[in-house]
Image (tube, rainbow, N blue to C red):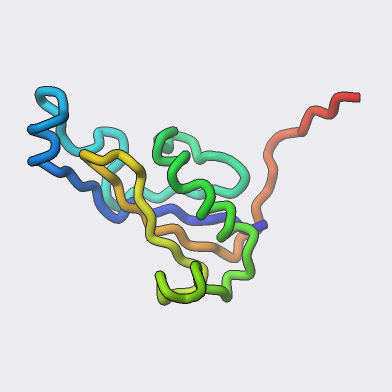
Length: 116
C-alpha cells in the first residue's frame, strides 16, 4: 500500500445558498486552507476534517491500493494516472482536494490488537 498526498486546492463558498440556508456569519471552511498538504494511507491524517475524510477516503483507499498507472472511472474523468480531484460534501462551503498516489510505502504505526 502506498501513501497518498492530499493537497487542499481551494475552499469555496456559495454565498447565495448560504444567505438562504446558512446561519448568520457563515463563511468559507474554517478548518482547511488552500495549500495545506496531508498524507494518508490506512487512516485519516491528523488535523484533517472528519467530514471531509468521510467524503474522500474511498478515493484515498483506491489510490493507495492501485498501481498508480490507471485512470479513475474508465479514463473519462481525470486525465492523469494516480490522481483524483474530489471535494468534501459541505453544500455551502465545499473544499476541493487533489489526491495523488506517491511511491512511498505506507507504514502502520500501531500494533493491531488481536482477540482470541
